[in-house]
Length: 504
Image 1 (cartoon, rainbow, N blue to C red):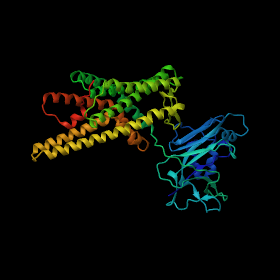
Image 2: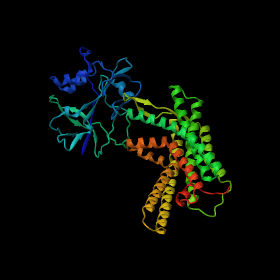
Image 3: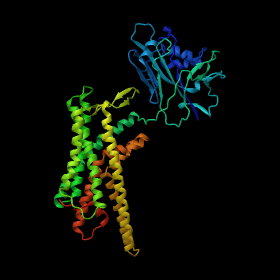
Image 4: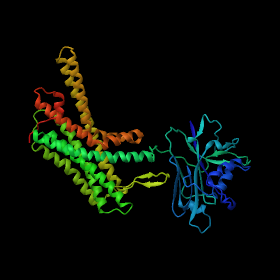
């Protein structure tokens, strides 16, 4: 489908003081009933009307300073950026430092096409084949003087989720007959396509924030309980697997605790300049996140030794060596980053309820030092998730081989054996699901946050509640330990992935 994008040209008409008391909400309807072309009438009256309703939908009418760039969004899908030089020209030779900026969207059905003149024009005479993107036209007016020969282009952005192959930026050119018709022209317009970015509405952003805060609080609570359970298990039956789980849970506790501290401190600062406390909290958060991924990687390494190199393994001071890597490497990187001064307030761009720029701040890394963030919390986690995914696949393969072997060795088809078979299958599924959280695989769902709002919710819920799932895993280990002590028979499949016996 051929799609055209229409930015209405910046208006050039002077204001009419006699219409100064007119309500902006009534301008469009009155211009439709007049004798002159409605576009010309609308350009004239919209600059002199009064905005009585400050929350007029999809309509921006305010004065901006021509000394700096102006950026407005009448809708989340439409945005206009006007350079300071263009605003200065539109203000004319006046002494005022501000110019009036009007931005809104108009239904494309109000633009009546005239017979096509020759030249570089696109005529939408067959709506089934050619349509205006979204059926809306972005109309912009700035100042009272024409703007030509700009040194910096005016940028118009149209967000959409449709497949557009040959979209073009066009503007509305009135017919010389002055009969209210016109055509779409590409003169002076340049079109560039960028990858679509998934936008989140304010309501969803608030919901995701609540989910994150509540989930992190629950993770802290259940992580403390999990630590107590692991300590009790370690005293009752010393095993290196439990020691690795204990370290991972501690790192996860530090991660969510530091995250809530960073959010609270930025809220307490309330727009003030960052201080050494915010930089310290950013370092703590970065260190905790890297420690979590380090111990997640060591969980995968431990599982590799358990399932692949089963026999003839002797690792002296195994947990001590793992601790040097799991805690030492993140500490070294965080100290180097701290000395380099990369920590501070991070301000990702977002939109408020009025579709204007707002910032959601957190104590993290400064916005101009994000290259360090990409290396330490993007490349490294991706490598960890890839390796641990292979280890989980190996676990599934091992469980499948054990079940196939036990099925061939067993005989009969009684209901009791069928029930035991389904119970073992359920335990295998629970083991794989638990290991997926232990190995940090839910972090891999971050890739879905770029394509789907549902993916954002799933990623937020699973990762904010990771401590809860770790608690369920600790409970499963505790129940496993008690059942093994009370029974002489053991299931070899789940036993192998839950326990090990490395030497000290």
